[in-house]
Length: 74
Image (cartoon, rainbow, N blue to C red; front, side, top):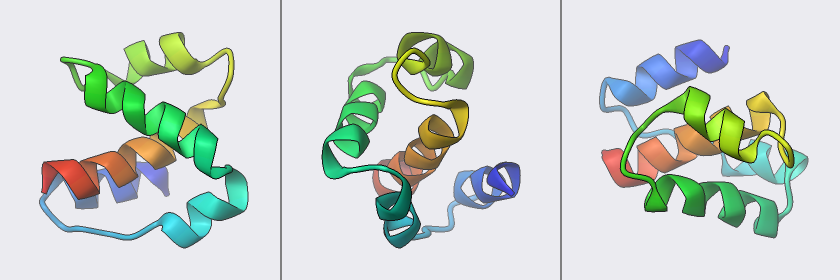
């Protein structure tokens, strides 16, 4: 499902996952992951998982990345 959401957002469609993300992460965690994507020069999911993986699981990182791409990329 995450792969499908990533494809949808990469095609230019905005989506709002805030309601779902709030169920899984608190605001500080979302801000931490979101900030990582704002500050990095590359959109490399594998690198983000290496960097953030000690604190967050892959699904959390991917969800916030989708939020980031939807809000900042479109």
